[in-house]
Picture 1 (cartoon, rainbow, N blue to C red):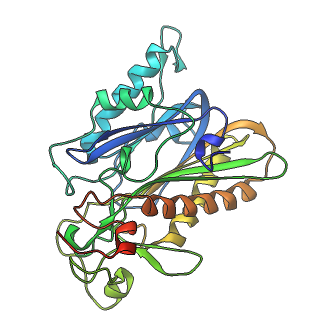
Picture 2: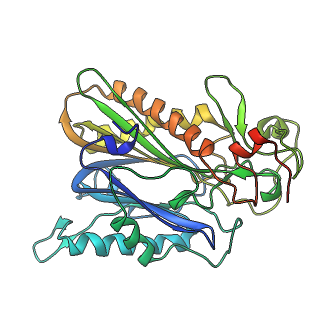
Length: 325
């Protein structure tokens, strides 16, 4: 066990990172196919091929999921994943060809680095080449440009990132998650109830402003706000149809609700993909509760492993004492 979404047999994860423009993408490969559902709660989502996850859609399985920076521009990176899978003869068989099904979702990360730097098709392909059972967490892949706590814009925000977690039950059921944390709100430790990353009272302060409290006091974000979005993928080796795995995605949203405050705002495009690979018999509600747990753990790992690159503080910087440079 790697305490990772890759603990589910058939899943590999790979990153492509741009540490100059501060963006990147992360692929979750499931080349043998996986039943997939989606649940979208934020009001500013950016997706490609999400329609194939509708329970009435003819496609039954996906072959990869791509999480990308670059806002809508980053959707182009999925073309590289499609190319990689086509070269391996992986996809939905239509007789004359096999068409890779690669649902894609993006975060807005254009404010941290170079707004002209976006994940490309070549980066999507590179992420596939890098895919394996082990991978880095923090400020890599789709988490390179991720930030949190943006009520007062980037100067008072903190670094987000990408994290993963998994749990194995005694009879062999495994549930795992990977989350790109790029939230408008603050990140909460759901065990202690304390803010661990988020908006700060000033650019050179390590003290949290408490975004939810500020909103209750009438302090609101007036400017362009589509600069956020948390993306998650949960996976299990339990056997579910598309309707049932969609319910798992819905229940997994509780993991975001417990660790991000506020969450699912008009500034966020929060969504969760859920994958079913395997033949374990399991109860939907059990898997849903476990999904909630691993999503919450992955959110906390994402910010605790993040790197601020000297631009804005990360969790580890506050522990050492942050002063702006």
